[in-house]
Amino acid sequence: MNRYLLMFQKKGNMRFLSHLDLYRLFRRALNRADVRIAFSNGYNPHEKVNIVQPLSLGFESDAEFFEVDTITPYDCAKMMEDLNRLLPEGVRFTAAGEIEYRSKNLTGSITRSAYKAFYPLEGKAPDAEAFLSQDSVVILRRDKKSGKMVERDVKQLIYRFECSPCEGGIELDMLLSSSSNAIVNPMNLTEAFFVWAGLDYLKEEIRINRTAMFCSLNGKEENVASLIRI
Image (cartoon, rainbow, N blue to C red):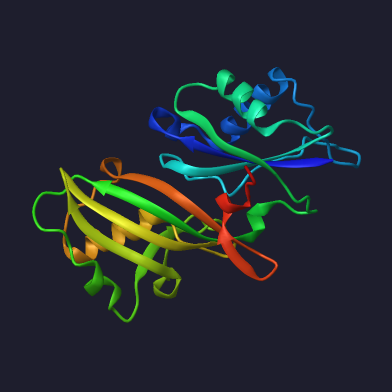
């Protein structure tokens, strides 16, 4: 069995494609490209494919990752080329490589994610350094069990949060925890930043782009993109 890791972009209107629809899109493309996907064992076998920590709806990305196990080996460059011919505008594979086979996929190994965000704000950019200097940084997030909005202090889960002016607005540069039990949503953090600064905030105005993902394997943290041997 062979395991391949493919890096892809999700841009434009495709940012509104749910991760379930993205799974279906990739499965159809793999089948049409004659890639023989491996199946799990047991009474209810399923295709061994995985989108590594899927994005929230509405986010763009330059660094998303897709794992697929195959029955036979493939030339990575050709597989990526064949798949890209079958994908709609806005979704493109940008790198592919065979990686070490593990019993678990990479999702549980993700530690941090980097984001760039743009917001069309007039006037002076808020002071991100002063925002982080607070004793706590509290965000509101929806509790999965109750469905209610709850407060959570994420100060220790923020590794970088910078704000600078740019043409037409401000740019936010963030490096946030993405481990399975400590995920910080950049949308929620940005909203908390604007509330702290006393500014109006419209979620539909912000554009968030994930630029990198990091994972911990064998006690070492590394950029997921570096796992791809091209």
